[in-house]
Amino acid sequence: MKALVRIGTFDFPQPLEYESTTATLVDSGRNIKGVAIGAVIREDVAKVSMSWNFLSTKQWADISKCFLSKYGGGFYRNVTFFCQDSGTWETRKMYVSDRVAKTYRVDPKTGAVLGYENPKLSLVEV
Image 1 (tube, one colour):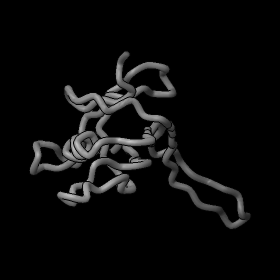
Image 2 (cartoon, helix red, strand yellow):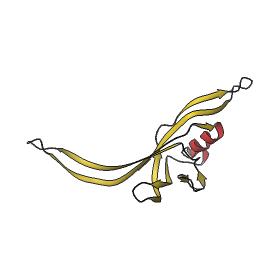
Image 3 (cartoon, rainbow, N blue to C red):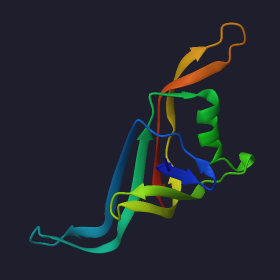
Image 4 (tube, helix red, strand yellow):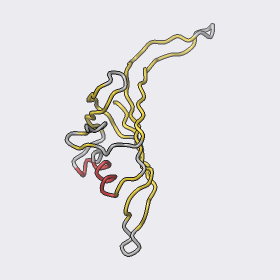
C-alpha cells in the first residue's frame, strides 16, 4: 500500500486519522455599507492533519527528524500527500506545525520513553 504522506524516501506510518483542508486566502474587508469586498490572493492551499493511536519512540523521532536541520531535515520540505482536491498524490512545499504526543510508557530501569499515545501533527503548505 502506498503511504498517504511521504517526504523524500521516508513514508509516514499509516495514520489512524487523516484530515485534509483546502484553504482560499482572501484579502478582504467591508465597505462603508457593510458589504464584504475582497480579492482572492491564493487558492488551493493545502493542510494535512494526521494522528495515530500509538507510535514507537523511533517512529515518532523519525517523523520529527524530517523537519530538523541537525538530522538532515528542514523546516520547509517537499511533501507528497494524498490531495483531496485532485484525488491523487501531489507534492507541495510544506512545513510542520506543533507536534503533540502523550508519553505512553517509561522503562522503569532506564527511564527511556517506550512510545507515544495519540501523537498528532499537521503539515501546512507554504
